[in-house]
Image 1 (cartoon, helix red, strand yellow):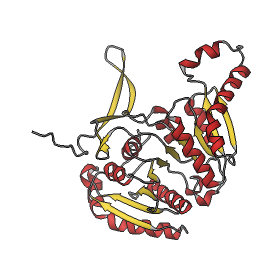
Image 2 (image 1 turned 90 degrees about the vertical axis):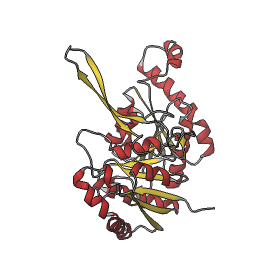
Image 3 (image 1 turned 90 degrees about the horizontal axis):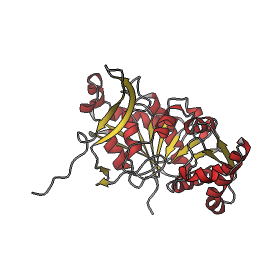
Image 4 (image 1 turned 180 degrees about the horizontal axis):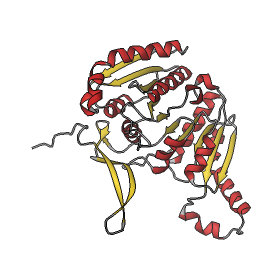
Length: 333
């Protein structure tokens, strides 16, 4: 059986440094090999960064090794430097990995975006679970040095894809000898619940009890599989993102299942990556791929409302073009 791997991308930014330290802690916890990757993709970077990107790979990876060692982590370390787009490199390395770790923003951060383009691309397309680390001090990222018993917070829905999310959260809690904080919001209730909710008394207490019972029923298979893991149930009528952001305070990680097959990263997950006070792990099925790479040409990165000259409101979308960075399979003549 091959040794498990934890992959982390570095680029010299503060967020990437925090991601590196968090990934080293996870590699140590899992007895896994830490793979530090740098993509020297100078042609796709802004002009001022081209020269640095083309020449800083070796020294940056050496400095990353030293940082892991100086921080006191004990794990085997490999380094990889390739001249290709970062999203493609990290997605390739993610095949069969335990976890892929990226910083929320890299060196080319823009002030108007809540999630860097590389982090967005990796989260939306990687073939494994992805942890996104924000630019907080390492002591706040839930690493080994930040305490073993912080809760693992997980967002719970009635969606069947939530099973993989819950399995990941309970396994992480078992690894950390911690507890699971299961969070469910009825602010965006499923239409299938409309009839049941209509039969309830018009009181907040009755609605809360209904959702607590539903949340408990969803968790039954996992509680049977992990009988030693304590579970804290948190139900709320607040918007989903707010409920999860509040619950993430003091957690070792926030686990979400918000990658939609064949579509971009969900809006709730995209917002939580920005506002959560702990690492966010995205668990879900990546889109259909060819050779491990995305087959669609475009993914929506973000959108905002704009007013047209006629006074109407329209939505302006910012898109990441995959056709320019993903090798296409030639069509047979």
